[in-house]
Length: 61
Image (cartoon, rainbow, N blue to C red; front, side, top):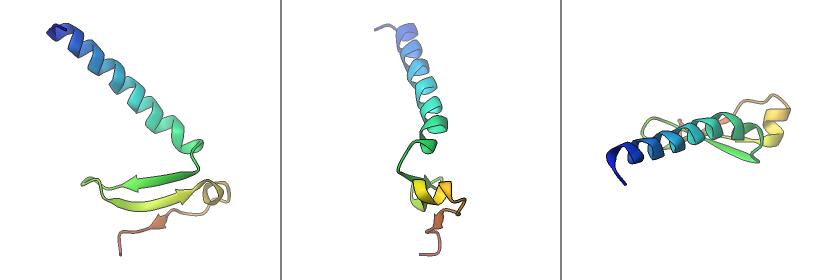
């Protein structure tokens, strides 16, 4: 793969990843919210989202 092919490959999967990050939380049974250091700071279940409840906040633990 030359440099241009690698760049196209990365761009393709970046677009897919961004789409999935927007679309999948609405379909997932559980969503884990991550902080900038990638540690989990919240958990949502599908039932809590349907009932309009906030995510469980794990930042205080």
